[in-house]
Image (cartoon, rainbow, N blue to C red; front, top):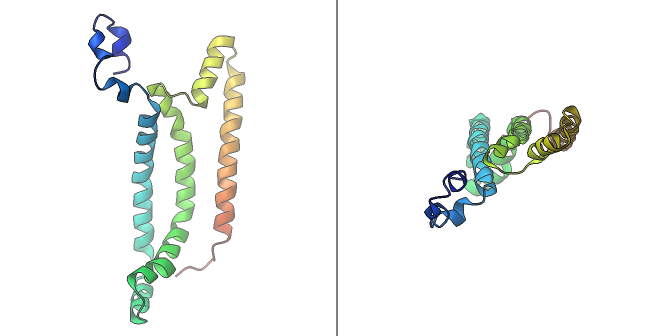
Length: 158
């Protein structure tokens, strides 16, 4: 849809259609695509984490007379989160690495900025090295912060 207005200027109805205000901006669709992708993976990770909580603990909580909400809040959710956190850390880093894909739908991210610098200055490696340093810094901060959270988790769960 983005290229049609430029490729076919003889058809002004493309830019005058009722869809043009919605499809003119690319970044909401990039965010939506990355969100749906991330949600699919993370949903499966959390499903596995919830399934990994020992059933005996849930039955014991029911035997003590805990409500479903209290079981979820005090037993099921903390243990599932602790089990899923290492995988969530890896998936978050993978999500960060997949953000340059939105540059294909004309969303400007740091990869697109480095490409423009490369085209304008004819420097090949310097913008890419800076880009790699930026990605490594962001990834390092994410891994460090999530590692601190993981360090606070007790070693024995369930």
